[in-house]
Image (tube, rainbow, N blue to C red; front, side, top):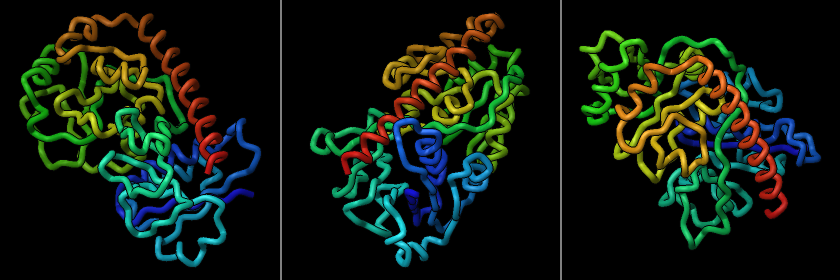
Length: 300
């Protein structure tokens, strides 16, 4: 039995637990059986409850203060945030969310090929964070946005995109207490959903709308991409990011409004092909990820 400990003293990035569990589930490249324990302080969005329902290899959820007494029980320790200074050790793998948040000693998992730096290139291991929730082919004419949002993101392009897509309802799911959409009858805002609620809202969506430049940082991975690919949902994505991540998507160069006509006249036959393609993409990425973690383990 190969035992892995994940830890975070922060109250965020626990969404990473899902893709780590997936890496060690039904991995044909690994010979051992893996058990995963999590050490944490707080789980405000109930990520761990959601993942525990999916993954039998996710065993014990512990208070982080118990970690020091159990270090010798684990073959591998993964830090969910590389800048978490609670515990530093040479044999830890850190998840590097932003290039300026390195701890300078570890091997890293990066969630985006944009998170890179030549001086530590040999330590960086890109793994797209997907997991395997129960998926459904049921959907409504809903376009869902997930993630950080502030009033500056409500620009003229987004406003016109919503106005000119009257056949769709838009869900905006974020944690900021703002609502710039009060004049739109086809918009619902959800603030502070837990993970299971968020996933259920996403499952009923037809498309996932991904944040665009300049509102989306090139230095950070947007978790909405991981959710969309995990749920095998077609995405509306700026071409720049589609090419970076090598993802099939409904793409635009600069503005959402470039695809208004396409979205509003989208044949169901084409949409069904998109669903098939999303499944192919999921399997391709999942296989790459599992081989990547095998190679990483072989070299630490």
